[in-house]
Amino acid sequence: TQLLEQSPQFLSIQEGENLTVYCNSSSVFSSLQWYRQEPGEGPVLLVTVVTGGEVKKLKRLTFQFGDARKDSSLHITAAQPGDTGLYLCAGAEAGGTSYGKLTFGQGTILTVHP
Amino acid sequence: GAVVSQHPSRVICKSGTSVKIECRSLDFQATTMFWYRQFPKKSLMLMATSNEGSKATYEQGVEKDKFLINHASLTLSTLTVTSAHPEDSSFYICSASPTYRDSVGGSNQPQHFGDGTRLSIL
Image (tube, rainbow over all chains, first blue to last red; front, side, top):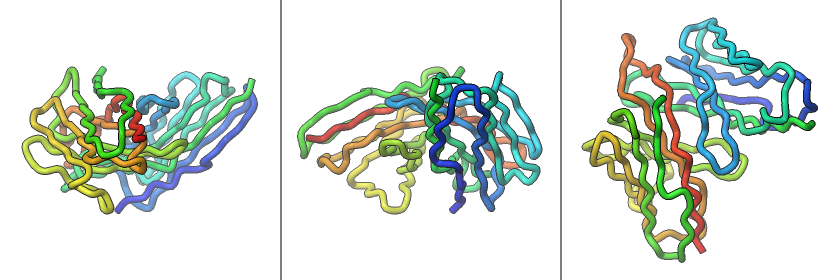
């Protein structure tokens, strides 16, 4: 069973601050996805990273995939109240009987105060 | 982009009732769909993998007779919570992705999620 450790679990910051969320595993993933979820809704895909060492930027969000494809980070610059939500990382298992199955991190509840 | 529709969005019913939740992929085919359960302010917990045309694969600790899964077509999977009790109250979410296998046998297609079903058993 693959595990994905996500930290921190809670983050409460002021508008304008920067933050980083981490996901770490001892297992290799074929890809890693980051989602954002608001209460009462399903997770919405932010990005998929596939290649080791890959960096993707989405406006103020920067996503990195570790060289060994075992870890990832999400960095938000100048956070805004609209960034508030539950952030989830999820690693996709490679092939075999677990094809397409995602391993989720514990989630990070981010609150950005005006 | 890929859209997954989940219905109903909210169910309130009496203890002992069976409840069916539908998950549809609207613009792609999915041989595999996934069902999750989520508790407040927690991450998603995989319940089972729904396979088109065959039996679902359940995660350890999930009662297959309690949570019946049927995946009769490439665009529809259903989860039926049988004889629901208050402890079954939760947020249930499905996901699916277009069926595609990359050159090393893995899936780089992201999962797309439904909007979830809030189940409340009185």
